[in-house]
Image 1 (tube, rainbow, N blue to C red):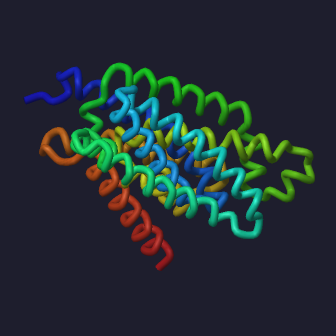
Image 2: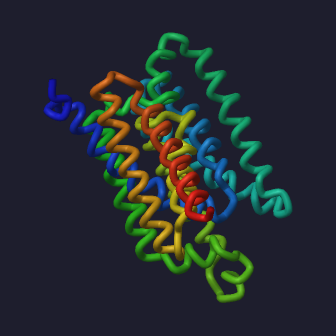
Length: 267
């Protein structure tokens, strides 16, 4: 049986490739800014939006995207309020997202099974409208990163130095976190809310093992992400495994192999 001949798997593959491109692009800046947990936070808030979408019969992924963007602005607002405790904003929104999602789950017990695909990921159920949304977000991320690459790099490297150089930090911070929210909200259908942080951070962690320079790190992280997505989808399709979990486990195996390789080279 040739799984690649089916339309649903072709959509899944295209969507996976797009997600594999955009997540490490944003993930690199997120990791360098010590905000690795922001993916989990935005994913859980997005799940609350998905739950509300099912409850009021509105496009769930779109509603999740709206919730994630609102949460992104809230995180930035709280970051300014607690300048010395930036991670506090992430903890607050994470708690709020889980709480709201649990309440909405209770209100709509009939759609719990549908929400599971967003919690754990079900890329094989990617619809044409989902694929259009993923494509639009990917294009937006690519344009933003290509146009503002230098500015985003300086901000990620040293916010104080970026401020001295006259960069509009507030605008760049908002842009970065909103782009992260968009990526997370459309990626939860691929790997699930519980695993989205892995796709944002593990390819970057892999690239940092041998990365030489910022551009090199970004390119390697994208390459590793694509290998994991395509390989994970192929393995899950052939052996009927959970696609999201397979992709993440493949990423972890790749990270372990790279760490072992670096260690052996140093001996």
